[in-house]
Length: 108
Length: 124
Image 1 (tube, one colour):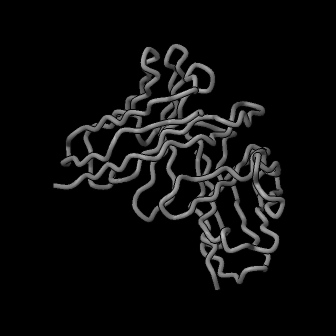
Image 2 (image 1 turned 180 degrees about the vertical axis):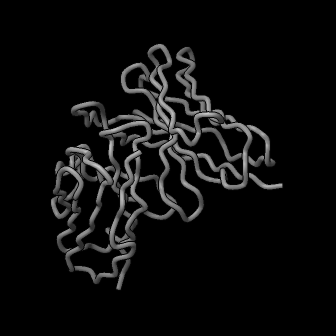
């Protein structure tokens, strides 16, 4: 089973700052990695797929990078609606298709 | 409009079973199948398994292999997730998730069509 590790666990930022979230896989997942955003009481929403492609309707301030075992989600100039929990998710090797533990982006 | 509608909240005692349903509108299980993901209160997402409507091919996470059965009734466009021998740590919101946006590459697709979730509470 591939284990995904996310850091930091919590990121405290002010609106307008840049957010950099990390996801590391215990073995290569190639580029088959996604990022999801989840707000309280809501189902997750797909932001990024194949490590760097934005899903339809996702603002350009969200970008993803990486391949193999190290991945990054960047939010340029965090907006108030971006405060949420972010999960990385691999679908290179199954079962299971694992999720990371999440990074909470909170208002500083 | 493509959507997944799940059954209502359940309260179960330890040792019991629960069957959660996921009815699809405008979504075809034979194309992409359905994934089940759960989330315990205040915790992260946990991938449980996947089923395809074609010959009901399944893949389960080893953690649930002995206790879970996923099935599909194509006549009613409904998927089911049956979890047995419930324990208190099975208390969670259970989501059925499909592929709505067609984000597919390589070995498969990314799920992006989430049902509203079904809260299953297990307590004596």
